[in-house]
Picture (tube, rainbow, N blue to C red):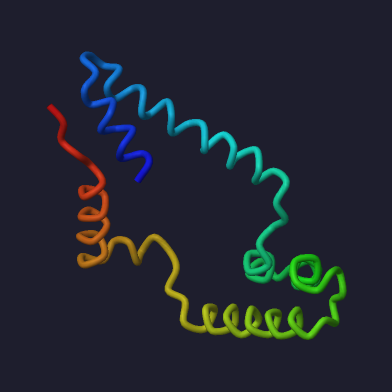
Length: 120
C-alpha cells in the first residue's frame, strides 16, 4: 500500500523520474533484506529436503527450544517436517516438464501478464 501511494505521488512528476523514483525506492527494502538474509539460519524444511536432518533439528532447537533438541515443541515440529518431506517426495512432480503442459503454460503466461502494466 505504501508503494502504491509512492507511485501515485510520483505519477504527477513530469519526465522519466515518475517511474525511476519508485523503482529506486524499492531498492532500499531489498538491500536491507539481502543483508539480513546473510545472518538468518537456513530453513529447517530446506535442510530436511536436502537430507541434512541433524542441522534441521539444531535450527529448530535454536528457534523453539532454547537450544534443547529434546524439547517437545522441537520434536513435534521435526516430526511434521519429516512427514511433509516424505509426502512431498512420494507425490512430487517436479521438473521443467511440468511447466510445458498446456494448462500450466497458460497459467504462467497469465500470471506474468497480470504483473505488467501499460503506462502512457
